[in-house]
Image 1: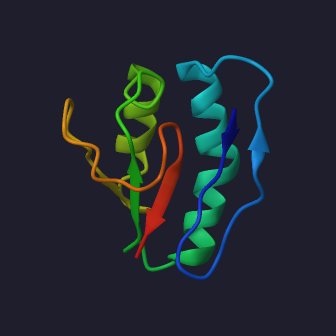
Image 2 (image 1 turned 135 degrees about the horizontal axis):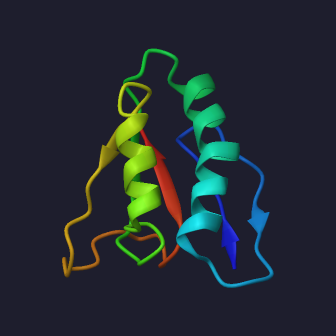
Length: 97
């Protein structure tokens, strides 16, 4: 499994996971990679972060972390059981302008 975050002009290196994604592993990725990317790309705090609704993304620890960092960027909520309107396959993340 790989994880990545990007926008129209920047991209973080792909992060390879050799194990199953859990809420705690996802939290470490958010804090180690997403926060710095969003700070650099959207220093004004106006960036939007989009993710699908898989279990690690909706975990209590990840949701709490995103709420705590809501002043750094906005989390675009993906409703459960919504039609897959995202061209990115399951498990990928997108930082949108």
